[in-house]
Length: 365
Image: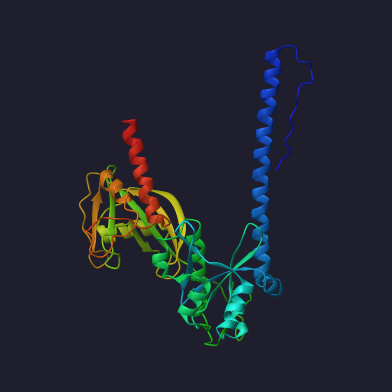
């Protein structure tokens, strides 16, 4: 970054108004320098954390040392351990690795289990974060010692904040990858992980395996006044979301979304705009690419492929606004209600973006 120079006039101040102008200029300069300093420190902190994590991935000794004084997130057969806060909300239990080791020894587990921990991140204080699946231990016993509950990840997504959910999802995805990648696809021989858990190696062939994500496109289709939402048979009762599908080999995301919309609801896409992306742990580990798409208002008749979707229909802004106010899934026995994926899900983000655009459009009119 180029240095910033500020030239100030040193001529004597003659009037009160001149003095006020100079003081105002100094206040603005102070605010600018303060903001610049904060931004610089945040960037430096981020760079420091990323370089620290990168070192831990390639240096087994450094990673082992970091593990001894790290935060640990526990899972039981891929369900995260959550604890209740004083506010009555739930959060992932961040335990010290030394406490986890004591728990393992107390429950009769062998000491090497801790080494199966997987590196998932780094706190702002440069404390490494690991996750560990303790599925070999008694679930109730661990919950009692840790004063928490192992909750299925799909349910957890409705209970966690936006900042916590991605970390838990990443942890589960990496744990699942290790559980399903124990053998080399070329030789059939066992693969061996590095200390961080960022790769697995077949020592027979030398092939290195890295965690993978499957690219998925999720698209919110609009005809200008309404948005199109659908539901799969596997969705919880009453939940609708944007259309989604896996990318075929050789396809671009734009080609994928056009094909999926054509296949699932029989519509031609006219235009596409990118929104955002998200790692999504369901059904395994997906990389969601979010888009908005438009179709001609003159050609909105749906032809739903019921082998893919249970239902698909157009929603007005009023209907979307009402559904967005449903904060939790309806309980068994409740009256049927339309609701959307949790706020942490990119499907929810696309729906909210569309609703905001529609409201701004109506205000301009």
